[in-house]
Image 1 (cartoon, rainbow, N blue to C red):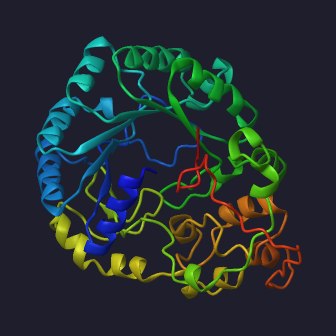
Image 2 (cartoon, helix red, strand yellow; image 1 turned 90 degrees about the horizontal axis):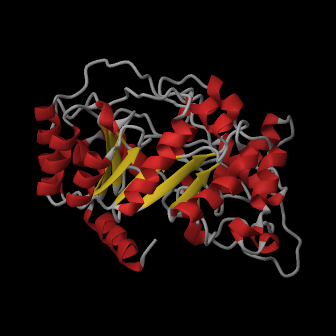
Length: 380
């Protein structure tokens, strides 16, 4: 994160401004990825006029970064009408797409409209693996062709890679592909439950041994020994830390107008079809509860040795049953990184939760990943 963006985030937090919003234009998609958490049927998407009205309200509320996502955004015939209006409102715009429907005409319009970046999901450098995940033959070839063309038009492309059982051994190949294409790349070893609460797709999550290998890859984390060093227990400052930006400086709006703290935090806080965006942002009781949470309020996590270093996602915790509880997926990542089980994992294994005392001398604090974003995704 740049110094400027950090300063903007800090200032937005002080002023209570929604700095960044993701709006999903549709859940419809031309791919059917095995790990996708969305229902791809159309249950009454917002109209063009409704989306434009929302964007104007967001601009008035002080939103600066607008991420347009889906589903597949190019499934909307009015996509460029929406994009053009968003640029008139001077948003900094990021797009998420599989790029399968981007041709020369679409790329030129994206370039001319000054889009900041385009994120494209690539799951493997091997067609048989990527296409099996998207369930569309030839999808890797088409996405790569689109990336090459977008780069030739001077556009910034970010390759996103979700790691799961099917592609866990391919992240190095995706990284090499990104370098060849001149694109940035990120990876995230987290499969998200369905937004309706169905957790069956979590079987796709990588296991302990695969995560341990990942977290000890010095090409990703730098000094693996230091990165995987035992953590220190939470201190006074970390006890008052915010879990993430969800509901504080960022939020998410679904194609149906539902307002959530984050795309991975499906706690409905209102609907922009019925209320003004700014009224939900300021007055929602659900958002007020989300904003009230600090590490010291989490009975299990505040007593856990990983409390100050865990990437705990309150949305994943919410989907597990309690936004103030642990996120098992993040407990598993902390365990894979350090070899020390969290209180939550100890409880699930039938051991009494306890605070693990670190005896290393001197104790090493766990450094921030220089190659990792705040969400926990690796970035090169």
